[in-house]
Amino acid sequence: MVNGEIILKAKGLKKYFGIRRSISEVLARKPPRYVKAVDGIDFDIRVGEVFCLVGESGCGKTTTGRMIARLLPPTEGSLLYKPTRETLNKIPPGYADKDGYVDLSRKLPKKLDKLLRQEIQIVFQDPFGSLNPRMTVYNILKEPLIVHNIGSTESERREIIYRALTEVKLTPPEQFFERYPHMLSGGQRQRVAIARAMILRPTLVVADEPVSMLDVSIRAEILQLMLDMQKGRNLSYVFITHDLAVANYLCSRIAVMYLGKIVEIGPTDLVINNPMHPYTKALIAAVPEPDPKNRFKIREVPIKGEVPSAANIPPGCRFHPRCPYAMDVCRREEPPMIEVEPGHYVACWLHSKH
Ligand SMILES: Nc1ncnc2c1ncn2[C@@H]1O[C@H](COP(=O)(O)OP(=O)(O)OP(=O)(O)O)[C@@H](O)[C@H]1O
Ligand code: SF4
Ligand SMILES: [Mg+2]
Image (tube, rainbow, N blue to C red; front, top):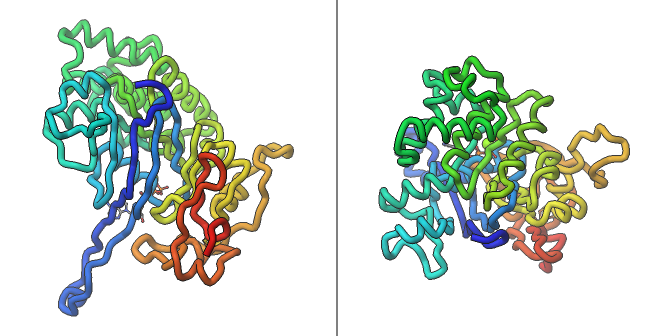
């Protein structure tokens, strides 16, 4: 695949979680209720880009990431992924469309599922929780090699593990082989988690807040490491963060999520320097500004109140109860997503005819 080609297309992607009903609700035949964690989102990810999902807690970033990594099946919609040529050649007929895209939301045969799991990896927020505490670093890195039949002898695997640790700058690697996760610092643990994802040579990596649990002093190093690892590979990242400053530093494009929807999406410089959605403006205004010359120029009215529950989404524009610009139409109708400048889209009635 070449840089710029679309590797993943999400269309109308939804994930609803059922809410357990009480006996009285069942007896009263009340309809089932859902947490609408992701409620119909569309986006494309290109080869070699860092695509960012930003938004406040509970807006559906992790749920979206887990659907991409195939850890959660979507409730509705499609996730069209373009596998590598080697994988495409092994795909049974009927699973790829004429352009070579496979719908990750479908149930796939085991062999294809395994190939795709090798290509799409995820790095979690909490390396302590995501690494098996009873396994040494060597075995943590060896496990995916065994599952995916990479390396035919122990010495070949040892060589691959050695290179993987060198790449994440855990050197000399043999000093880390026999360590357990509790014998590592937070930053070292996250480096092991990154090595475990990268050892399979993935094409798409979902990184879910990979630095938010680390000390501020080492966050930049880990982010830089992730960027360095992209060089020379046609690797794409879906980077999940609630921190717009991190998104600005790292990402080529940003999608701003609010209560399960994307409200604004576009190239990072346009979204950061010319935000169109009142929610994006508020997020930018909330970024602490240590530098008086200010990185972000926008200073706007902060929004009021808390994010409503995803089990009880307001009608019309779901942001209207918190929006200082809400109009009548906002309370009634959901705003369409429109292109306001090339590649920059926003869903807000301030920018659409009504
Ligand atoms: N397994 C689940 N069952 C029920 N509800 C869930 C489940 N997973 C997530 N949710 C709900 O879905 C919504 C979106 O959650 P999600 O974890 O995707 O948000 P997020 O943007 O990653 O938030 P954070 O920044 O706190 O990590 C939340 O309301 C959450 O409570
Ligand atoms: S559609 Fe209306 S309520 Fe929603 S963000 Fe725009 S102005 Fe605010
Ligand atoms: Mg999350």
